[in-house]
Image 1 (cartoon, one colour):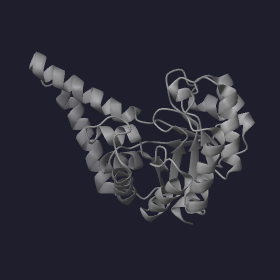
Image 2 (cartoon, helix red, strand yellow):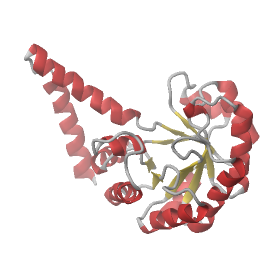
Image 3 (cartoon, one colour):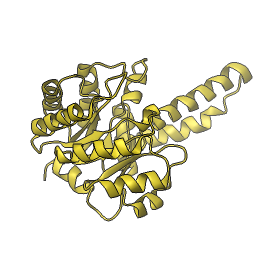
Image 4 (cartoon, helix red, strand yellow):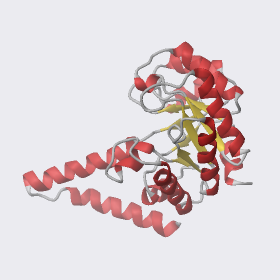
Length: 263
């Protein structure tokens, strides 16, 4: 079974697939060692690791970062390809073909160009181009970006996700959904697995499972957790002049050593 086939199968088990989002090879190895059966890159985390804001990587940089992660672990890795780094469907297809060559098992494509949503028919054409380019060699996740950008139009979101599923997407995803009612309506409205992003207010994993959610991801949150921990340690060092952070550093070193030795 290929990694793509294994990744696809993980979306059709009794329990939701919990997918962690590494920002570099080291974080990916730790996440794999914790028991995650699949990983997905985070555009915000990968950009932050290079000193940039979300969306700050170009196609080559994003694919290289994702390829490095895929090469570091043995589980399927899906790439956050933002809007496919292209406006037109043929450009999206080119990006997906490069993702296949990079050794990835999946890829996501958004319907947001950085400033606005693509018109629904064009957005569906872009998904269709991604699916055709993947040719079964990648699990294609199609994203509707309405809610993550403050456009709380659930009817439009469901209509878009339905059209993406009809275009051949393996998984659909509307980051920014928070309530059980919203999530239930989306799950009921499409006939392919639905991914939900962990955010404040989102139901717990057991509750999401009852709603029929097939995949749960964390986005860039763990990358930001790591930066927050570092900033707190830095403030202690600069302001207090103490080294209480060394206890956490020791725990982190043990985790890293175990993860790297195990792989």
